[in-house]
Length: 258
Ligand SMILES: [Fe+2]
Image (cartoon, rainbow, N blue to C red; front, side, top):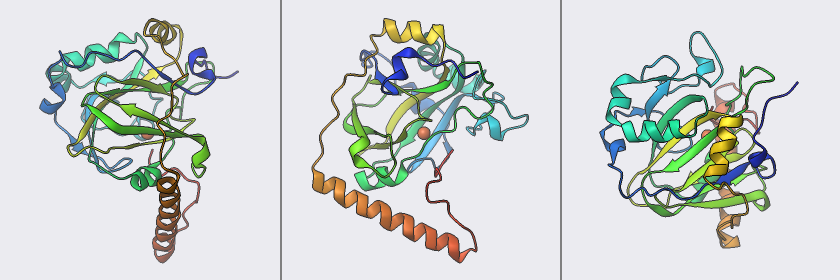
């Protein structure tokens, strides 16, 4: 037996939906309470749905009792402040696990490459049930910023770069891809991130929103890529030495964040 996957995601592991008209929506994300939570950069998170309906953004498998990233409980105080964001997360019709707004401070391409990680969405996810994927809905207008996806963490030839204007909507199998955001803005970037369970409901939503994977990756100067690769390996070495000094071993291919 294996998990149920979305056919739309089978080929590339990501899809881009029709852009959403973000301009008419209130900036509800600015009203939410954020918890410092370093994940893939200088970030804070505002929980809308969590393991137990509290503000803890941690993976459900790290909570008590542990479970898969499904059946998230709405955080009453937060979801009351962000009814539009909750509606948008629910619109997919699929079971929701974690639902959060991420706040990301501006960074560099080298930062983003160093921050690349795979999510652990499907830990404790029973065989035969839907595979958990993530929706990234950009709330702020960050057309110069890029969601970076790599099949191979260390191979830039496997990289896809997707722009993040307001209303952009990308659904990614984030356990399959190494991913991070290069945020080229001057103000924080905000995005709604939702864990959805694959199945007929999500498939119908992806079809209705014209999900497509034949999108053009934003080109990047090869010198910029080379410099970032060197910086990536320099930082990993630096980190390895720091771990060694503490008497610990750093797995070179280990994801940096859950
Ligand atoms: Fe992630």
